[in-house]
Length: 219
Image 1 (cartoon, helix red, strand yellow):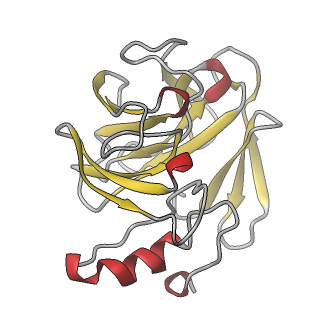
Image 2 (image 1 turned 90 degrees about the horizontal axis):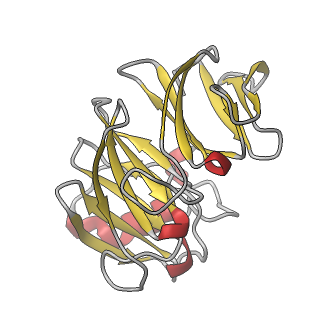
């Protein structure tokens, strides 16, 4: 959200709906179906960069990330099909650091998370297929924790979320299988003390399954 509008991707219509936060009314439809600049094939994750005022969209079917203004003007793109650095195979979630300088992308089919500058320059990749710490089975949603050095990634088919440091690999993984199955997206992670983890886990992770229940702190 940019504070006034919320931006919603439609994977079936290949567009982004710009809706008023106050009423939910649609005020604009951005994009169209295709492979050109500003066009989409299954737009999936989306994030707003408050530093630049632009939208960052996972263009899943085109295996790329596109950057556009909040009015729909094309700005930039990066990525191609493949498994190399900076390439994607059906990427899913996206998140931007609070200072707007880095972009996290969950590369779901390849069981990894990639890190880029906000201009699309590749920085690093984390993860591999598996069930161990730092391994993934279909990473999906991702959100940046307060600050700029770590993110929470949804490890969907392992029924957990993992916390990842941008310096190279996860430093804390937590199972959420007792709370939900097949988590889809992290809506938010608020700061909390390690001693408060059990209660915080339940409060926050109720918000990330496909059929999530609105937790008290969102009331």
